[in-house]
Length: 330
Image (cartoon, rainbow, N blue to C red; front, side):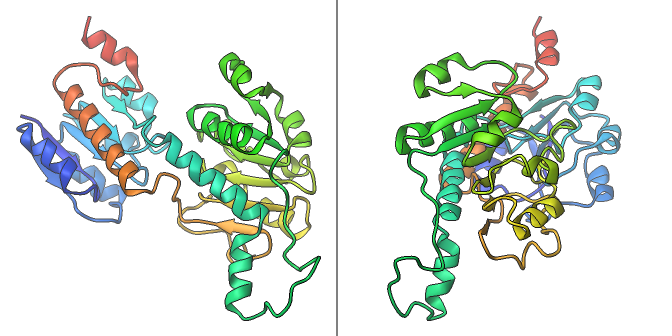
């Protein structure tokens, strides 16, 4: 039997599976993350940890968790966990890829369409009773999507799914950045690999799909945004700090780019001062990329499965530090 801490609300189904496996579960059924001090205290006697992306599992937490064997993160991104420090201590870490890919890509494309056709602005316009006549060139003119160029910054699982929607559904030309060529995607979608400056210069819509790393933090600054077309839109469903929000606000105000759609924020859940007050050609959503009932439950189930397998001494399906799992199973 292992002692397991579930840091935040994940629903009863996942917790029940952990209990049915014979483990002692401490379930913190709250929607606010613990403070760093609270988390350090909570992990003192824990063998397994189920956490969310808002739980910062840093070296202080890892040092406090002397018995910790595995961390199951209920997210595909894992920038909230010091993976190197966990690996150094022999602690397995897993995430929840695949199950949220299509749902997040749906949301990214929904944001793309919403900013291109100015749907939130149109909704506000209608509800305010401002629509009093049809005009050939109304105040809320939008952008065409069909046949335009879609730039994917980071052609991983989600980036590929966004690209597929653009190419197959909307006849878009796809450019992408990646560490290596994706031949299968190139053949399927007639996509082309490009450098970031090339992609920015040519794309009508730029979708950010890279993980947050030291290299991608503030990848999009005013200098980067100035490389985009003045008629282009930026869509971010990855991680907020990839975009420097003060610079994005400047770019929107100066019409350096045409518009932006954001699902994530630099200092989430807050937006940079002024961004919330900027309504023209800006769409914002509260980190809803994977937020459907079915997908969120699949994420929980995946995390629970990974944890149970890892605590049983086997290699979890979605382990991130495979070297530890491989050594344990030699």
